[in-house]
Length: 464
Image 1 (cartoon, rainbow, N blue to C red):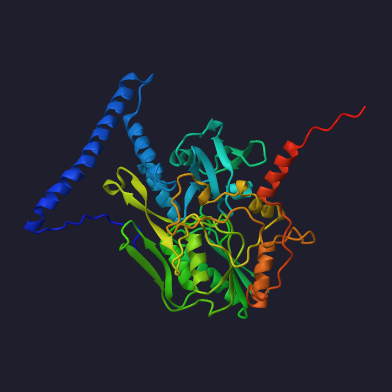
Image 2 (cartoon, rainbow, N blue to C red):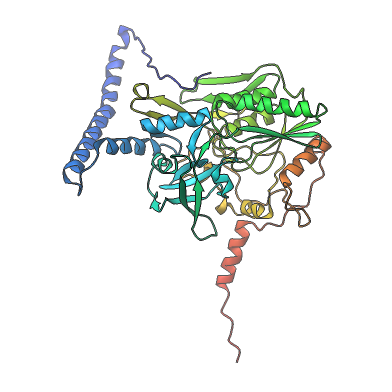
């Protein structure tokens, strides 16, 4: 399965009768090309001016690398330039081992934003949450830095202490001290909950499919009479496409898993499942939330569209674009991480921006229910200003009251979403599962109107 895409060139041979047309086309094509050359000349002039007149001496290599990264990040939030060191770090991460804190991050308006902490890592243990902003590392501001440069400051020798300054909605900035570890998370684990297996897949690295299959086999050996499977993809930031296909394939008997489509409408690549469901067709529920992104959404969308599983939780993140890593001179000069296509579920849905909509929308807490009702506090792909649009023009669902949230009587020590997933397994489907009363979250629009009304009220007359 391809991890890198090769970019080729096509040549069209035209007959003599078309020569006049070709000449006209060549003239038209030369005009934008001349503009490109002029702008490259401008870049050279700017670089020369900075070299000669900036207040201190500059590093040409660093300047040019930053310019390349700036060009790519202006396209969308997930394209970028990886210098040789960052390219090596990325390869270590996809192999499933590196030194760091265990954070999946991105950049939003020059600020480092957390997509998701990885299970069992220093970041997860410290309580860092999706949507948090990292404003400084070891007291040094990372505002305005590229994601690559910010990550360099967070990674390093295991055992060293790193201090992060975190900015969070409705909270004053605060510092968190973490100790770097060798991040070697097991991407798939499993446990028995009665006669159900809960399969937790936290990321998609080179070992995920094998680890998922082994984790299920271990639970099957412990309890040969398993009745249902819960696949937990919550806060899974994604990873390798081939591993998303591999995990989906474990539970499907055949058919399409996902397709990716590039700029050319004819450029479609489809990935299909092979016969063989490791569960033997056991009933299945998939847990997702707004931290489920990319490869996690491919799995959730495939199992939902193929009618293999029903989905429980809030709508997923909505990262449905394909990034191809293109090494430069064999990696000597680093690599480009370039968005080259969009993902589509088997039914033809674009994941981009809209995310995967669950069959039963369940908030994990009453606070999360309120956050869903107030879209201003929702972190998703749609919150990026330069995110690609969904190909079919759909938009992500706005502020609304979620279908379910934990009632007042629910034991907060338990996992409400897992409880509702088990209810779906018990009753056989979302449709057959008795629904709980709708939570009383206040919609953002209602809150705004109430505030406007409050401001518009005439001042009360003072009483003597």
